[in-house]
Length: 579
Image: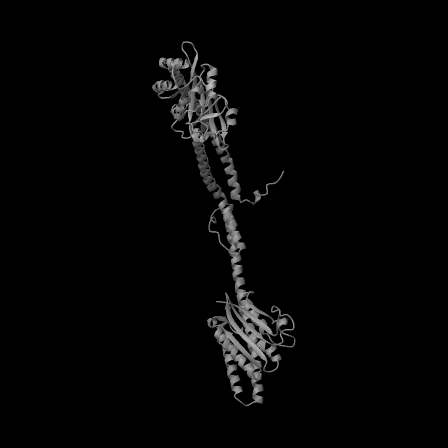
């Protein structure tokens, strides 16, 4: 059996909450689903019965309407004036014009509310008459005319509603042969036109269903009537044929809307009346019940979830709080628990034990921090003091040498520069000085070195005015310049040595670049090892001391980067944080 790997990763709160939630929610959901399906089944049965009853009522109304048309045809056939006129015309006693003048008043007298047309036997001889009735919009196709004469008095209906491009008005035509009441001889063919609007008035729709619609299909299963003409042809003939049964059933119209459809045969015709309504409209209460059931279930689950969360949280919150504080301890934050310490159970013991542990860690960290601070301060003082005695010794030696070999003002100038250097070195033991003050110290040192070497090298200083008042560590620039003179220009012929000093700001860094055109270093410089900076037999500490002081004060990101220039010479870059 495969193990569930995600369960151990969950918190205690989630595990308890999920188990309680599932045990209660499943029963609530099952009860809601059973109630919904039971109610919807009953409503669906009632709705189907309602559709069939309405369809049956409308089918009976259409049957009565069609019988009314047939009764109208009986009255027309039984009209004495019409019988006499047709019998005399059959015997060629009247000319065509007389026939027209006599027939139209009779038809106008009887046609209301329907339009009547009479086609005498041998209609092809009545050209003027045909032109007259054609102008009134009556189709004079002869297939129905011959069919009526063949049926010898049996009436039939013809529909002309589905041709959207036809010029004929939408509706139905009742066709029947007029026979002599005396001899039963065929006299004419009677047509009664029934407009589609008149038929639509006979159909009653439930006012609460806007999308309730009717259609009629003939014996060949063709749709011959639709109460909304734009819907004609939307229903697949095959769907109606395959599902033509008595009673209600479901089909899918155009594969989009689920429809509830019912059929009913219309007596005295070969046609059937079809009632259709979208299932969603007729079964609206089911939708309401479904939405109500969903709301009840959701609300119940939400309320239940709140109570379960409160209950579960009461048991798991103390443990979760201890876990959160332990994570803070791992990140260096030693927080104390103030809740639950007065409890006498296991939670109280856990809280008091945690506080005791954190208290011991705080005391240990405080002691360690104090020792490290004292150590760092002593190391900084030691590194600064390593520079001053050595430089003072070299300077005094230079003054002595100058005094022995010359008797001019150079000695006084060197002594004055040396005084400035000593004054800056011992000024109150401060660690910081402004860029401007630090550069004054460097310039005093450069002046002494130039006098010593009889101005054998030149120095170019470029400092951006915006950084002149920024604070930097004291005695960080002078050792770098000293390195450039000692290992750079002093190894060149007199007059060709050059040192360039640049200071500027770049984003959050203050950069000091010192370049010389000397021979450069014989191997790559590693400032983390003192013997890489101090060649054998020499006593300089400059670059190493400055880099070490920067690392101690600000971290490994800041300090010195040194190396040969691609063309010739040596470059030192000091990275200093902007305060």
